[in-house]
Image: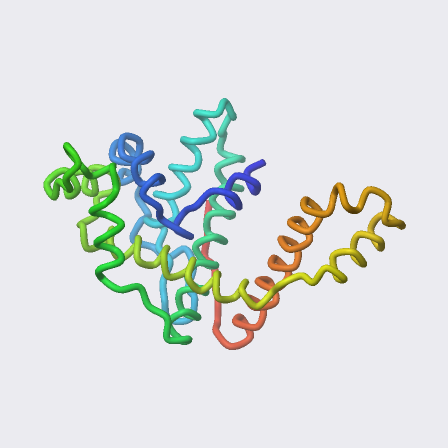
Length: 227
């Protein structure tokens, strides 16, 4: 269940305004009392992923799970932390790959998304003071730090879109895959839409894994997660 929630929730990996709003009350009270935020959880090439990042995001997922009625004990937290770290590593890989490919997210794109968000608007107008206070209260970030996180999330999504755009399914491929999986074409037309969507998801996941494996052959990735 944890893997499903992480895989289908827009995070960072990565940080969306919806995630940010949901973390405002919870994070400010506890996250920065942890003692090891100065240490590194992982490295992707020369880029560090800090425990500060890792625990902040893990705490938000844990809060959401608790709100859904899930008991989050230390064992669950340990698993959750590992999966969040995997997400952060994936985002960093996508960001580095996007930069190498010449992709970027312009300042005006970040500004537009933030200023047009209802989370930071009062009476239909962007409120800079409310925005800065919310950023600080949520995660102890400066606006510049938050905007950089937001930019990274958009950049990783942009590169993922480019990566996935190369993978399309032909009608013949869908039909053949259905026949192989079911042994015949019974109910193919009725099930074709859902089957094609699942097949495309599988194809893109396989493609992304192959891409990550290739990236790891050229860039050193290390983890230092401790519980």
